[in-house]
Length: 196
Image (cartoon, rainbow, N blue to C red; front, side, top):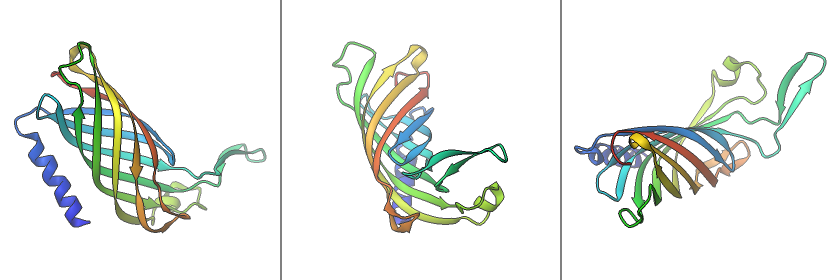
C-alpha cells in the first residue's frame, strides 16, 4: 500500500511541471452510494491531462429504507450502513479527438488509481459522536476507468460528465461485503483560464 501511495504522490508532483492547475468539484452517484468529488488537473499536452481526484463517498445498503417514527416525530433510515470511503486517485485523461472536432466538446478516456480510506462507523448509534467517534478504518486501493465528454464553457471552465467502472476490494469483509465495485457517474465542474 505504501508503494501505491508513493507512486501516486510522485505522479501528482511530477505531472504539474509549468502547467497551471485547474480545480474542480462535482457530484457523483455510484452503484453503492453517492458523494462529492474534488479534482485538480494539469494539461501537460494538448490531448493529455493529469492530476488527482479525491472523493467523499457515502456507502448505502442495498436494503436501506427511509422510515418515520410517528411517536417521536423523527425520520430515520432502516438498515443504514455507517460506511464512508475517501479515495485519493492519481488520474490520467486522454482527449481522444482533440483538435479534430470543430466544436466545444472533447470525448475522453480516464484512468484513476490510488489508495482508499474506508471508515466503518457503528450502525446502531444515532448520535454522531457515538457513530463516528471510535470508527474503525481500513486502507485499501481503488482503480477506475471512465469514459466521458468535456464541454468547454466561456472563460475556460469545463463541464465533464463521465461514466465508469470502479474496482474497490476491501481485503476483508466490511459490513457484509468483501468489495464495493460498481458503476460510477461523475459530473465535474472545472474552473480555469485555459482551454480545459
